Length: 499
Image (cartoon, rainbow, N blue to C red; front, side):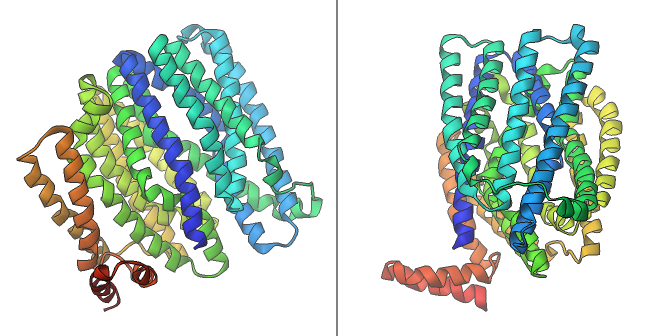
């Protein structure tokens, strides 16, 4: 019941953030030229890079350590929090100095006014502070706070963007709205300061855990920062460097839509996975938790992958317009690769929970080197397809290397047998979409085909035994509450899972 409540709160946060963000993205794309939208994506990338420089490796470790010391309940949490607050303030100071230095050398080459750059930087810092606070709330499993801050901020964002699109759709104004949204996130987070655990400096606590925190944070910083550069940013940079601004916009659209699709259902479970696995490590139950998580993540991912591949052209045309049909192939490729990355979460979070960040950093450094080499060759030769080739190669390498490293912690990747059962249900459920495509087209075909796929797929998982026994237990709980005509079907479904 508690996990269901956590998932519900995480769902509110994820849905409001990603899907309102998606509306914002497509509104801006429809009101700017493909080149200006590519430039807008680059500007937001700069802001994201600033936030990332402050929070990379910090936020995820805050969640992990807060969850760990909340579980221990030995009075050390205030000291741990005070130490993390100090680290964040130091990082902000370092980023400020670096930003001023870089701006001094590169300002003549930028396409933005100085005042806009300053505002963008300050608002990115505020967004980093918001994310730090939300990491603490995740650690203590206060997912309702994440949901409330999103419900406060996201309506402002969408109303401001729609107003700007209606009256004065200019690139600079859209950037200013992004800045205003960052400030709203920061303000909304402070409304819940009283819910934050208290922090107070404890010399003994800091001395005892300092080395472990620093080691994990430094390695995690490299991991998170390099991950952002490897899985999106490096491809965007190389596309822009080769004056392929429209292609950079197409890549960004595919990235946003595939991320939103994976967030639709699997992301809810993924959002609460790190605290669950951290608890499981304390209870010596990590392998069972990871195995169940990977099974759920794959089943939930395939729920959205097949319709996205089949109806990518319809989705792009409806959301962004005919001008952006160049994003169809990237979206089809990206949604498959995003599913593979989702499956990598079991190994990833197992390694984090077992403090194996140093090994993870080595893998990320290797992947970053591969990203540079492959991008230098493929993007100038093949443009957008070269960027997709780079992304796909890095995804597969990441899956193999992380799984191999996690085996040292007793990790076992989801079995071929289970993957076959789940994939078989998805393949068979896709057949009606193929047949329907011969009769209908456009939005009507996409809506009806998706509904049919979802219903057939979810039921076929009983036939192929793609669910586990926990679903059977859930069905037993809800069977008495459903009408009599459902009982025979539920009895059959339960029998399939326990046989």
